[in-house]
Length: 472
Ligand code: FAD
Image (cartoon, rainbow, N blue to C red; front, side):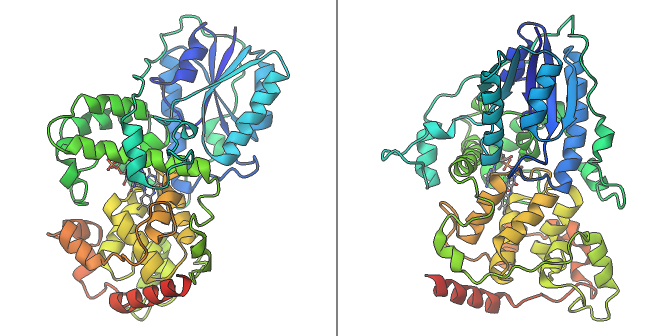
């Protein structure tokens, strides 16, 4: 009996209920479909593609050790998955559930196709601690405020993680080879901007689980304070591993429960896992979270939508600025490009943007400051920033990215009030008091070559508040 485990954002062998069920009768085949064609599916950003390439290599290695072949296919999953199921004459197709609107439509279509044949299709819960449709307020609707959401959800019990399947002594034969990963061209070539990513990250399950155990063996106990120090390794750096499902929230929660009780660190960390859930529940209830203000009042906000210079990389933008005759205002760089390139003249913002470009990740405190600067001091629409993060983050997440941008912009669920505008200088003094983070990422900050601030912080703040008054 051939059973297909259709893997998506769950690229792991342990705590993978779909894979475990597929392996039950010894005929498991793992399938990954690169789907950039189904209606509404958001194509991956460039940093995410880099991650996916390496993640699939690691996954193939891990699955081979279990005697499970991994087949790669490309195309609209609603066609590709049924065709492959018939080709290998599979009896069952199993997957872990997804929560985005277009993805759910694809999954429903495959389930309906299976129901019209004698193929059995079954889905499992693996990526969220609680299914969005099971968490309801007293009034029956979804939660809009985090604190009561988390009070309800964290009091519930979560299942323990499942083990990886046992090694299969007799893998199914006659399985087609599928496509060659190299042919998907997921890696950047010219220029290859990913060397910093490769130095910073090892995509895959093994590295994800060691990041989890390293974090829980030390930094978690001081997380309540350490999480706000961008110069220090005080956070888990689990975000890309959770995004790609190398590590599951059940594994994190279960391991965390073993280190609780020694101070507030572990509980505060648990709350962040809760924010991840809250973002996904928002996406489930608002499939257009990345394109539409959750608070319609913000539809009238006079934000700008600059185009910037398209696909030019920050390295190229920086070179262009360096050649400009005026150092104080790099000629040829509009404010959006200066923000992307880390040349705004605001050291903490520039440090974050350069960290992002260099390693595909930015510290949370600095994400908030850099995003607030774009949306409030530069008056640029949060969607423009969200798209840049989507392109450049290795953890670019369909739920957490738009939900957090809407949080910063004030247009989201339980958002920061618009009038609370981060001052990047005050933030730097509080959270990078020795200036180590800035010195690391912006070594030129104290040199004459460093640009003057793009805007006056106080004046641009006043403008932002006036614009906000116009929609109140
Ligand atoms: P830790 O502090 O160790 O937190 C542990 C885990 O909790 C994270 O890995 C993440 O899964 C989750 N988490 C923590 N904070 C948040 C949060 N605010 N919202 C949702 N989940 C959270 N996170 C993403 O995973 N993907 C994104 O695309 C993303 N975009 C963001 C955009 C903006 C503008 C902002 C302000 C935040 C964004 N975040 C995003 C949330 C947060 O910045 C990252 O999850 C965090 O910095 C990842 O580092 P870490 O794993 O060391 O976090």
